[in-house]
Length: 124
Length: 212
Image 1: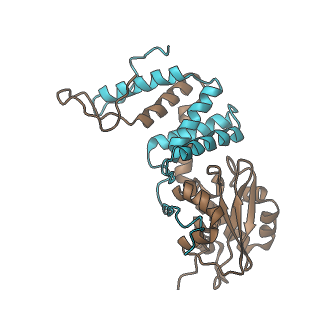
Image 2: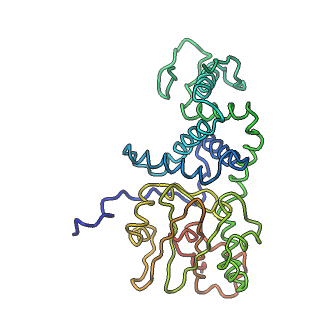
Image 3: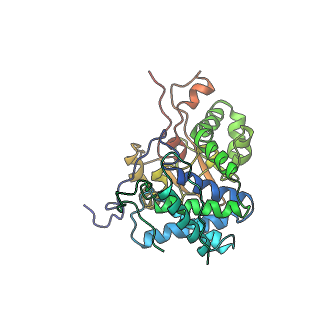
């Protein structure tokens, strides 16, 4: 037995078959597509995107997140929010107000009806 | 402001209350609305892109490239010289496929791909990466202990095979050209493509042996 083997105590890999779903939840798909489309539209370069995403991945590691890949799109979303704000495409208060309004609308819309933003909170 | 989180209780006497949505999903809705209202995003373009990745882009594309390279020596040559261009010949190009490098497995060399930074991956040929490719254990262990990782995937390499690990980044993405399995002489390109798994093009598997 070698105590010097650095790989020995590392966690095993999470498995996933080739036939599994591409996205586990609809929000993952939307977050994914928003970043790709904004980059295609020239709002940021893909290199910038990778910098922001890898910073989020590194931050998760710093926090001690085991990061088994299943929280990948959470990192993706956090990177997108930061990039949108840093590029001046939107502000943090705007996002907070919209998140509040969407949450209210989702909670209060009766089943079977489309969820729409009716009440809007000002962003400041 | 306080946002209701998943699992918090709701008033039982108010029948217009639904389960509180996940915080994450609401952040995505907020971004989508913000960007749409500012004219920076077209919701239809979002839906179209998602559909493309759910139905048309995936490892079957890469398998076509590999099968072509196995059956057409000239194509194989072009693929190894200029991966991006040769892959585009088959109609696979676009985001994260701009600068492709194809690395060939032989009897002496086995190639394996990782992205230690995040998850750079050749989308046009392989689709979006599997969970394990994005996981910290793979990102770390593919570099520290690649033979151990391969063993977990059920691949035992002989000691005299050189193992090369390629680290993808924002500029360069790698596709492994696996070795054509023995006993596949005379098989058609379509039949051969069936033997090419996603993992064999990442280098964590070999191409499948033909059935029978």
